[in-house]
Image (cartoon, rainbow over all chains, first blue to last red; front, side, top):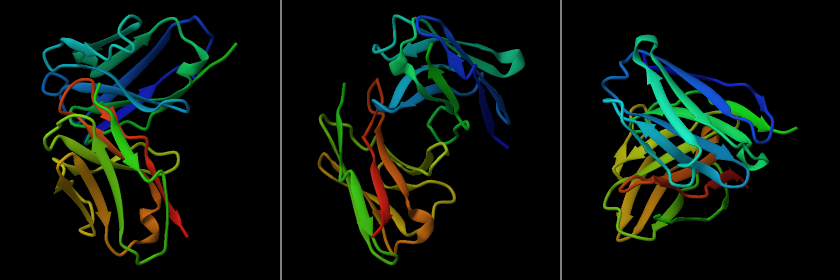
Length: 113
Length: 107
């Protein structure tokens, strides 16, 4: 059974770094791309980037300078890190498997002092 | 980036109605178009892939079609469980881009 679950900090201060973990089960990260998508009040659904089954990454240029995606295949985890957070980054962050057929439940991130 | 113009933004409808939601792509995306349903507090659910193919477990009253750069999601005989926001997504080229969403609600 394919499952994905994001865990995040909830509240992050402006200018700080966001770290979110996506833990998966029911499949191998070495067989599928893993995507990150966020949903904000201002811009709706936005694709952020992905990490390929081989480990290379691709980012939306909108975030490229401050976004990093990595993984630990032994722990079945994918990581999103984004720095220099702004209030506009407030939203729900999702991980999704390759073709968006499976999504995590999402984690709400609020950027506020 | 490819722009996906989705319409209408809001669609009041009655149970049993047939409704259609449309996305227009700013560039050629072939059939690399997906439709998602999202209910409050839930993650998006894949409904249609390849513009016209029903995803696993999706009721047959849902269908997808394409006419040139216009892509449509049609729901026949609307049921209460279909009330949600629907989004299109193009994944022909990076970055994948979503439509702004259509809120389907009871009239």
